[in-house]
Image 1 (cartoon, helix red, strand yellow):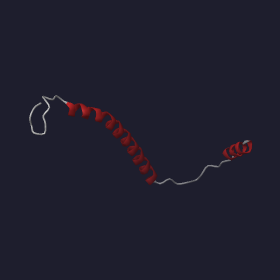
Image 2 (cartoon, one colour):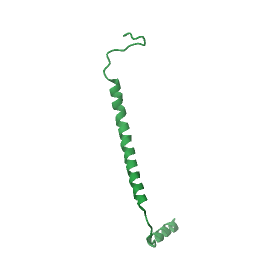
Image 3 (cartoon, one colour):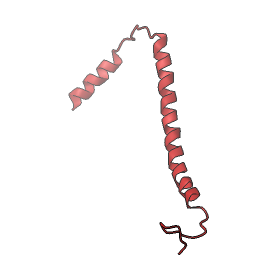
Image 4 (spheres, one colour):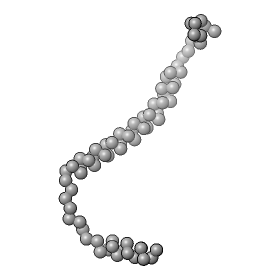
Length: 73
């Protein structure tokens, strides 16, 4: 356990900065990912809120029950 912790600390202290190029495609992909996640969250909240409202609207006022033949009970 201590060997792994010591090795991790040494590697973190001795780490050199990476010289790498991040192209414009990464930024566009990141923006698309964030928009997708936010849209998924918004749609899930909307679905949770909309279902009870839809049930209330369907229930609505009823004047009387009718049978299959169209007669009132």
